[in-house]
Length: 366
Length: 197
Ligand SMILES: [Zn+2]
Image 1 (cartoon, rainbow over the protein chains, first blue to last red):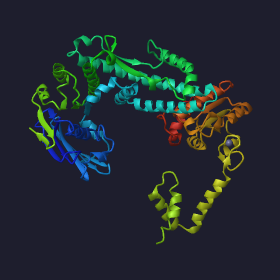
Image 2 (image 1 turned 135 degrees about the vertical axis):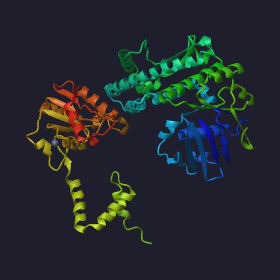
Image 3 (image 1 turned 60 degrees about the horizontal axis):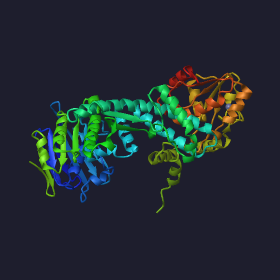
Image 4 (image 1 turned 90 degrees about the horizontal axis):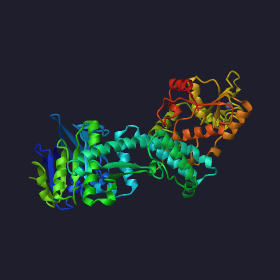
């Protein structure tokens, strides 16, 4: 649990020193554009060694200063640890953990599991398949040790195949890329399906107390782009993909890029056989997308044994008061929550939170 | 003001793989510290080697002669033909000392990104050798990268019409690792445990 936070010249903040007095839940309120997201960002940075939204560290340093300091105190199993980062205007950053210089984020990740969820979570099922594949690839990358290397190999095959398609003389020249594409695609999808099963199970657990009638019929499924497949077995998948790759050869040649395989697939969430995005309200979409994200965090935290610190950046707009209360109630009480909102009254959903107000005057704890 | 008199030398030395500005400077000062005739010997060996080196007409290994010493060695087993990507792979395999057959250097691996298509490799020459030398086994000692696997898949298909056993090394190496760095024991095991294709 994070017990203290110190910011100096981070983003729009001057110097801020906060003691959460052992309170697990921290409620942050303030108007838009006063720095709520910046505040959460500082905590994310301390837990992960980088920002969740800004790739240029120099933009994190307050405009008229040369460097910024941030730090926190975290207590775990009755031990207190201190993390500090110094961020310089040239983009360099220097971190310490209990005064030991950090060479990688390994040590941080062993003590902190900081995750950020904003209102953007609704994009999961609103955006194009690329977006969802990124979500799934990231999650599988954390879950399975061999996933990232397999994905890199797969992407390399696709890149080589696309170059070959642009210079093709004989149809056979594509075979030795397709043969590999089939192997790697199969490996990736095997892991993706395992991940989706876990996601479905965990999402259902979260959904049950709030939308009991969704529980039975909630399905997270995988869609094979352009491949008619009734069941996923090694033989079935590989044979079908091989046949389809043969069928689409002329089309791929005309287009100059590869159009079937794991890089084109997608996943979906259905309730009562109806697609979430098309048949349900934005409030429901938001709730379920949130739970899907939370499910991923939960699964990883069970694997690492490290409870998450959740940075919630107003993720519950469009959700009515009753459901909002219920959702916050569902979020594991063993997790620490930093909840930022423009609605001061949302504080009522938390049991004895530390309350922080952010406005033009700065950050106030009270 | 005179510019640094070592600039020219350092620029040249920094062209070596793994040599940065600091190492280049150290090497430059080293060259100043040793007798002039030693520097001359080094430089002339470089130029001489570069000028005299050619590809073996049979296997495309590097050689000073028309055919390389491995091809010339009558004690080597002509029924085993090991296909590699580059001459440096032969050196790695020879260091391990397990393999006693002959080699064939493809001159790269299939990689359309780099403009290397099957036609750019010495595959026609390999087929000619299969016809004229009729080895009993062709062993692919090719790094298990995406491009290496593509090359093996391609060759397997092309060579399947010949009456020859095809096998590839059983690498206990992580994907993408370079044969050049494989230790000798690993390479010995890889040859012993080679798998038929
Ligand atoms: Zn030779």
